[in-house]
Image: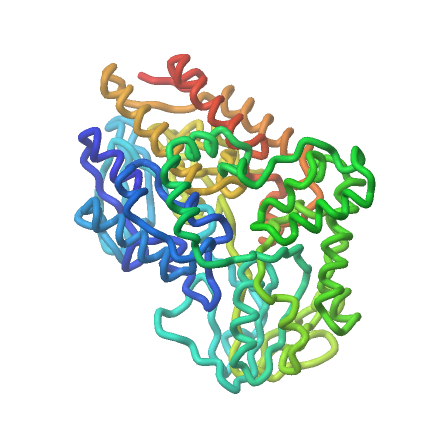
Length: 517
């Protein structure tokens, strides 16, 4: 939506193809019970228009899905965006025509269009992942994926329900389903670290103060590591071992009761010192043990195979207490793996669980998946699938060598999912728009990343990724949830602020690392 708005502002003719029947992206598709943003609502919003910032008010610190979708619709209406959007349409092919210097695009609705520039705004988490379990097609009950949830309410009352997956989505949806299900079986392969969301109604005074300094907050966020302004939460100044252990525990306890994700900001070295990390991880595990009555279940819910922060830290509301309910059973499929889906439910190696409804909270083919499902074909007939056979390579996460005039918003090699994604999106859109205007002003018809610049950036992304805590997590950040997918840290780990400086530097040097002709 912002790319459309921004392109219009500089006089470009734009058509948007959207697979959904409405705007909202993530918040259009993910309608499952309990869905809400895990960042601060005031920051998870557009900053490009001050009147928009001031006129919209949030009801909660972590806004729920219906409110986020209402916000997206408000933005679409306010700027009359829908007239340039073709809904219920999926792009099936995109091929670069070298002599004509244009992209030829086809859709599942029979559209055949050409465009000087192709911008992919497909999101990092939109290519749904349903694990290829044997037998799903013969299941007699109903099944749903959380990212393709029906608009009509799903009634679980009295039913035997199975939820497969305990990542951030599972942690949100499981407590909600448990409230009405006759019995809920939770199939967990790997436990995740989850900390209390401490969600609450929005304080009008706090919102008013934040809005009065919105421009400063936005500037700080863009220069920060994660695309947020956390200054009001108190940034760490010492490493964990620089304070007495009693003081360390007190500091962790204080952060535990504040609005996350400030918990990981208690000390400067939680993400860099494994010994410090281990103390923090055990603090969180002890919190889990204190909330789950059955000690065996509590231990199964305690992550022990990776450092805290190596996978996405989830926010939860009464997630652990859910396993104290008599109608909830945790099934450890790490030691007792799922063998198949049967007519009547799920069969693991040792048992069969009779179910009437299945819910897949199994996430996405993240970051590269949405792009590869389009599989653009660039110069010399090279497809993106072939180019990325060994893993994604981009320049700044914005362009790909061999694919002229193709821009990727929050593509691999950019901070994307490791930052406030709205901050990341706005920065990308503004950089892309400025680049296209530069081309127009100077008479350039094509822009493409060089192989050398792309290789250097890819090496840098891999280097900082493999030096980071993320190398210890077998997560979707590394493509580990998709069989056969290359294992590499796909987002840029160096921080949003560092990344923004690099992008600005490249543009200031006449788009260093790009060929314009």
